[in-house]
Image (tube, rainbow, N blue to C red; front, side, top):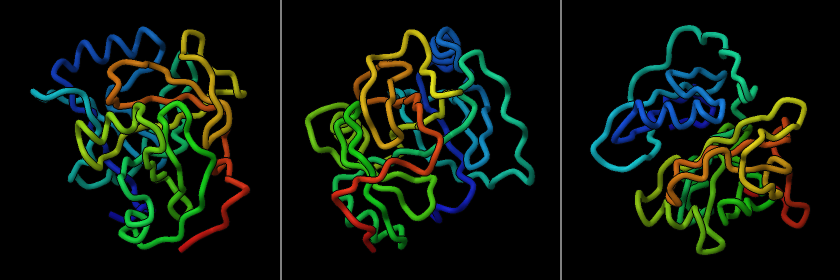
Length: 198
């Protein structure tokens, strides 16, 4: 998959209506949501909640993002779980820039090219490790921009991450999918100790 292409995502869950209601309660509508770099649809699956890349072609035009109560209408990045960040970067065939670690998920983070893919490799036994143990190397997280840098009320405690201070919107299952509200709105907070790699 080309990281520059428009990405079609599915949120698979045993009960789409319940998942949609749970997320709507925190002000986030995930039903057929369209972003500038990706579309997201919630679909039924007999297995547990997970994200996957759909094979359906991208739409010819991208609809305007609906206004949400919490304002999280902009997708900053899709976090892709991997057990080997360097190998995954080679498979994408693009340069990567190391970002600040994601402490919420317990992961190293690296932006692929200009995005929207951020590779995530576990650096602790935390949420990302649980995602990999359950589903393998899959899309695992959505990083969403909070309006004016204000994180939604009721989110998890704030931590520093690849897109500045951030919080889990819906802690949910430890293996995700992980919705992360971020106060940053740019291309990611680089790790000053690491230079751009190919």
